[in-house]
Length: 208
Image (cartoon, rainbow, N blue to C red; front, side, top):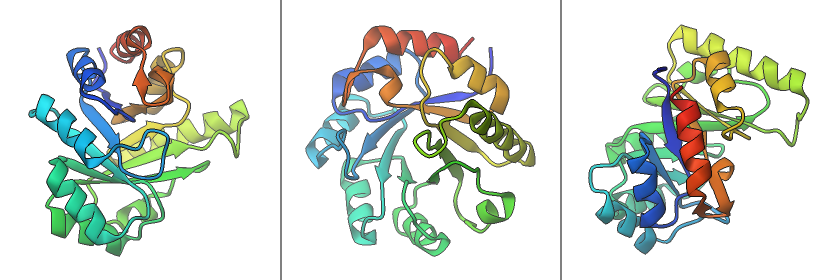
């Protein structure tokens, strides 16, 4: 069995979060940014209360620092994911004020190089969200996964996301040796609602 971890993102209710945890997810993601899967503080608190020991990741995008700090505190998140154009200085401030590990995400076609990742000095994890709309070709995707593998060999803890589902997660893990895979849409029946069969299939493939 591989050691790649699994993050189930876009959770909106305690039942789905509990199911993901029961099936072995390592991280639960709740989105506070503009999204069809955006949760309220009350929804996030309900998930936190239902699963007090789960690792809850709060996802933000280009939001005011005070908002990120306050929401992270009242919702009891364990990690803060910054999915926009946040600078190294901003990430440092979030880390300092929340005391939580930071996941800096990049939605792109190319994986940031080691120098750029290293500039985020206090960031614990990175996430590469492959933008299939900009480069849907299989060759571009293979190049991206190859670049992820290189960054991983250097030692960066990199999550991968972008079009991942039960049909391809095993291959992506094999190609990238990702620290973690991050799935949202690939295990849904509709935005914000997880499909139990798809989730079970995904976890089985990710753990194969």
